[in-house]
Image (cartoon, rainbow, N blue to C red; front, side, top):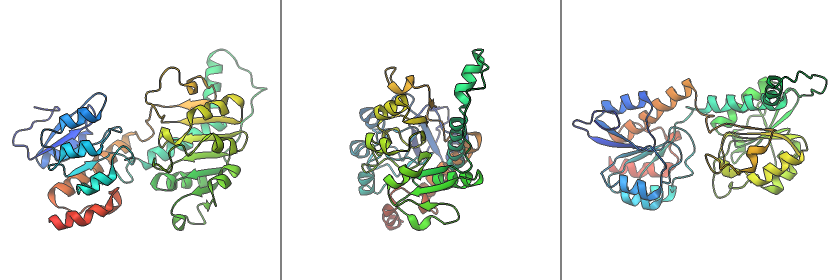
Length: 339
């Protein structure tokens, strides 16, 4: 018994970079003869490489483990697929994975509804000052004469990134009567009835009352919300991040919140998780902070678990691979050549 799952006559080894795998995913994988090993604790390149000394066909990425070139070399030639029960694969060396013919697969639409809904929840909480009012009221302060808030209707939402999550956020925001501006690499996918395409980041920042980040973390987007970009936002605007912490200059954000240039922010992710106690953002009263849970809900867990397992089964058994779920689709031609 390993990882709480019987391994008699196992055909494949699945290494999970966490203490557990979704129950429905584990059930689907054991049907095809998978042995599931879990790895609780902090992931390092050395620890992963050591774990991969035992022949492993699948890595399931929980969190953001460092799947570097060295890790992939340690896993060769047995590794056949890396699966992420989510969307972000910035901790994977995609070039090295492609060279080794290993598809990096994501969970498609699995957590998009959950992330989109918490984004809207953040906007409602910030605009109506719900969190601060809750704390104040519990402390016995029933003042109402100084309360001022804003509705979402008629306000402008700037979305940076327009993938599955960004599109769903736009749909929900439109239902609230918001104007939606989008900065995206694929403007042709933006329909006029849903959103307008911003000409540039500066143009979006000048007009948006709320700026929400839904782009992947790449070398081009790292530090995208720099000190200069935050200064370019409208005074009294709000910044939201359910993507990756490193998209934002956190020191600059803390200063903008303290100075009042930004009215508030909501972050589900930070550059260093969990944050050290001296992170200046922790002292900001106009900040909502959650522990990287935007993509977690009962429905999202079921969907991402099922899609993760389906992705793995398709690769291991020669089934149909959903191209839209492959982060490095150029590797698919190599997989056809193996068939």
